[in-house]
Image (cartoon, rainbow over all chains, first blue to last red; front, side, top):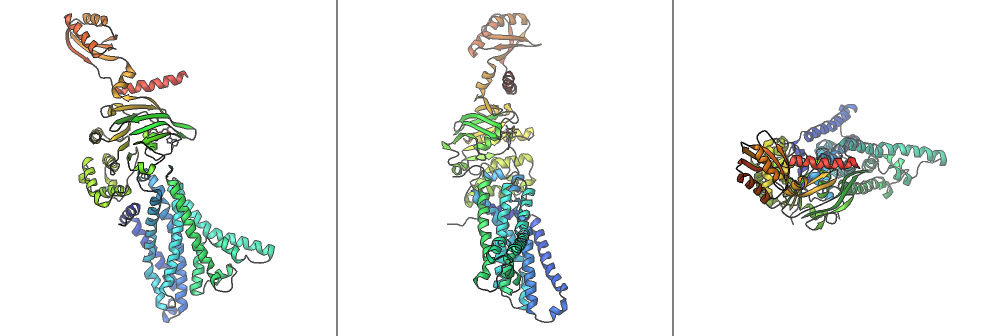
Length: 285
Length: 313
Ligand SMILES: Nc1ncnc2c1ncn2[C@@H]1O[C@H](COP(=O)(O)OP(=O)(O)OP(=O)(O)O)[C@@H](O)[C@H]1O
Ligand SMILES: [Mg+2]
C-alpha cells in the first residue's frame, strides 16, 4: 500500500513555497520573536545577566518567549486558515474542486494540514531562539517540546475554527473577522467573564470561584492552558493555580492544561466535521 | 446516458428551473440554448452534483445522482461558465493536481496530461504558469481539466464565451474531436448557430422552462412550418410568379429586386415538381434553391412566442 499525499495539501504546499507571502511571514515572525528576546535582555539589564548563570534568567526568558509565541500564533493562524475555502470560492476554483472525487473530508483535512505545516514551520524555525535558554540550564528540551506540542494543538483548534468560518461565509474578510472575534472571545472574553463571575461569587457567597467553576469558564483559554504548563515546569505561574483556587500539586494541579487540550481537540473535531458538512450542499451517502 | 426528469430549482421564492425534462442518449451532443438568466447554469450545476435541486431527478448512466453522487462524480466532467485558476502553479502541475483529485495514480498521469495538452493544443505551454495564460488558453486548459478522468458525460457551460472568433473556431474543433471520441456532451450557449453544426439535438430554455427540444432540423420545421425557396430567372419574372402561384403548397411570394422568395410547405418532391413546371413553361431559371433559415431568428421567434403567450395571460 502506497501512501498517498493528500492532493490538496500537495497543491497548497507547492503554491505556498512559491509565493512571496510564506518567506515574508517567516521573516517577520523571527524578527518579532528574536526582537522580543533582545528586548528582554535590554530591559533586564544586559550586563547583569551575561555576568553569571542565573537560572531565573532562563525561566524568565522561557515563559516570555512561550507566551509571546502563543500570542503570535493566535494572531497568525486565523490569517492563514480563514481564506482556505472562501479564497477558493472568491477565486472561482471551489466548484472545480468540489466536482472532483475528493471527499469533503479530505478537502478539509488537506486545507488544515497545509495551514498547519506552515505553522509548524514557524515553530521549528523558532528553535534557535528558544535554545538560548539552554545556555542557562534548568530546563530540558522535553519542556520546550511540551509547549510546542501545546501550541500546535492550539493552532489546530484555531485552524479548524478558521476553516469552519471560511466554509460558512462567502467572503474571506468576513471569515477572517469572525475567526479573530472567536480568538478574542476565548482569550479576553473568558478572562473578563471569569472576573465578573468572581465578583458575583464574592458578593453573594463571600468566596472566590471554586476549582470546577474556574475550569468551566477558563478551559477554552489557551493562555491559561499554557500558563498552567509553564507553572508546572517552572513554578512561576502560581497565579494560575490561585485562579483555579488550588493550593497543592498532584493530578488536580494539571487539570487546567489537560482540560484545555481536551477542549481544543474535541472542538477541532467538531468544527472540522461541520466544515466538511457545509462545503458541499449536496449530501454524500 | 443523461436523463433529467421534472427538475425544479427555487432560489427562495424565485423559480429558476421549473419542471425541466430532457434525455440525452449516449454519444449525443445536446445544445442548451437560452437567453441570460434562463436557468442553463443552474441546471448544469445540478447535473454536475454541485447543487441540490428543489425537486426532480437526474439519472446518469442509469444511476440516480442523489443516491450515488460519489460514484457519479467520476463519470462527469464539468466546465463552469466562470472559473479561476491558481496562481503560482504550472500548467502540468495544474492538471496533475486534478488528476490526483480524481484519484488517478501518479504513474498514469504523465500520459494523460500529454494527451490532453495535445488535444487542447497547449503542449508548448506545459511549463507556463496557469495565471499567465490568455483567456482562450485558460478556457482550453479548463476543458482539458474536465477530461482528466476520461468522463462519460461532459457538461460544458458556455465553453466559448468571451473568446475571439478564431478561438471560438479552435474551441469548436476540439469539441468536434470530443464528439468523435464518443463523449456525451451537454453544452450551453447563447448563440444558436454556433451549436447547430455541432449538436445532434438542441433544447431551447426560457425562464426555467424547456420550450422546444429535438433535432436541429425538427426545431427549424417546428418553428416555421414553411420553408423558403429562392428562385432567380432570366427575363420575364411575371410568368414565373404566375406559374409558381398555381403550384400547390405555396404559401406566399415575395418579389425581391433580383430574385423571388417563395414560402413553401411541401416536400422535396413537390419542390422539384415546381421547378419542373417552370422549366416546362420556358422560364429561364438560373437559380433555384432552399434558403437556410438563420437559427438566430428561429431562436428569436421561439422566445418571442413565449413573451407573447405570457402577455396574453
Ligand atoms: N445563487 C443564486 N441565488 C439566487 N438566484 C440565482 C442564483 N443563481 C442564479 N439565480 C437566478 O436564477 C436564474 C437562472 O440563472 P442561471 O445562471 O441558471 O441562468 P443562465 O441561463 O445560465 O444565464 P446566463 O446565460 O446569463 O449564464 C437567474 O434569474 C438568476 O438570477
Ligand atoms: Mg450561465
